[in-house]
Image (cartoon, helix red, strand yellow):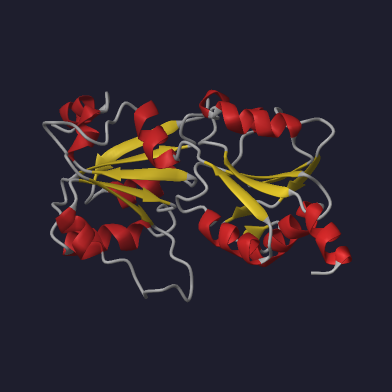
Amino acid sequence: MSGTEDKHLKYLGKVYLVGAGPGDPGLLTIKGKGLLECADVVIYDALVSEAILAMINPTAEQINAGKRMGRHSLLQSETTQLMIEKAQEHPIVVRLKGGDPFIFGRGGEEMQELFEAGIDVEVIPGITSGIAAPAYAGIPLTHRLHSSSVTFVTGHESAGKYRPAINWNAIAQGSETIVIYMGIHNLPIIVEELIKAGLNTETPIALVRWGTRPEQEELIGELGTIVQQVENIGFTAPAIVVIGSVVQMHKSWESIHIDSL
């Protein structure tokens, strides 16, 4: 290795893939907060809350790389290239991702590409919305009388992925609680597939929007009628979907069924 190449490598910074959690700033890890306070550059996602962005070092360069349905600030390839470039210029580069970097957050893809570029990477886990949103809604994902198994699944598959479709039949038959990320857009298809797979139309279902934030709201219903409920009130993403008898633990479940008598 030449002296010039060796000198260049010494000046490569480190990228930290930091999970910001679901929104409540109190759920950000202490390690994640410390990195935000000393970062040189922070590249953040759309779902990172304003309260957490306010923790960033005021002298740090802040770049919005957020992605929402149909609205991309940066393409994924552009985001990765940006991280590589910033790591060649600054010691501490934080890639701030909503929830946990490795739970439907493309953190694994980004880590692999950074490794291949010779960039040092460290992952700081975050609390994922699939756990936090139901908890804030008073819905336990496991319960001795209701559920001893949980499946986490995405409701929004990428094009050209390693398999053509989620096996909803296997999920319906293999887990007592199903937690779906990014499931609102495809909810009619998901519900149809789960009913085809054998789930009863009266299976409890909860939609938790903006989980852990002050604006959190929940829609509670049954599998057979939830799509119509969503349409009737215009319930929109981002939301976590929880399916299973644990939803009966939600405070409004009993009143919903009393009102329907």
